[in-house]
Length: 171
Image 1: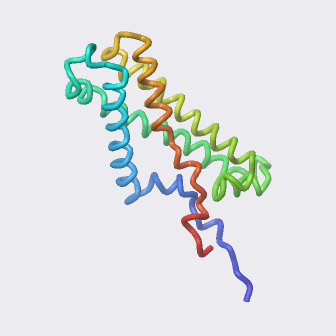
Image 2: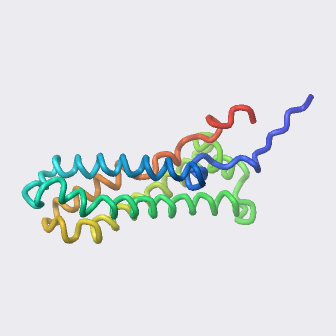
Image 3: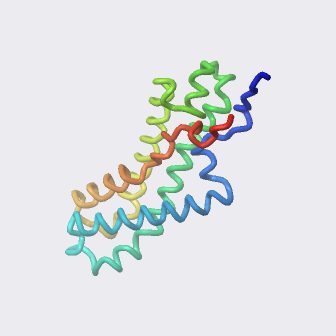
């Protein structure tokens, strides 16, 4: 009997992160990671001298860090989604589209495209946090730069690199 692979009904794992009920897990996970990173930055970059304390710093920044981070992740995911959906009409090779959607490491160009989407998300996370979240909280530009860069690198959407085939074993 011939096995049929149903690639068109399988969403990339990074795409599933934005759909209920998974989105709630994603939001909670992002909030927890953002909380750890914001707290770590407070101590690592000695922001204690700048703020009223960890509690004040955290309360004034976490919601913005979390929401801006999720917005940046959505932008990166949209780039990959558009390339995955419109790949045929953009005349992208099928191997590249498959790499973007299901197994990034099967195609070097897919890794580059996914890494580019991740870097765009990270750049947005940096810009949002440097210009908006911490602009009034951290007056010292060097400390603000370090904090925004650290948050951008640690919280960028690393899950984009997860091969979907790991989660759809039977297909």
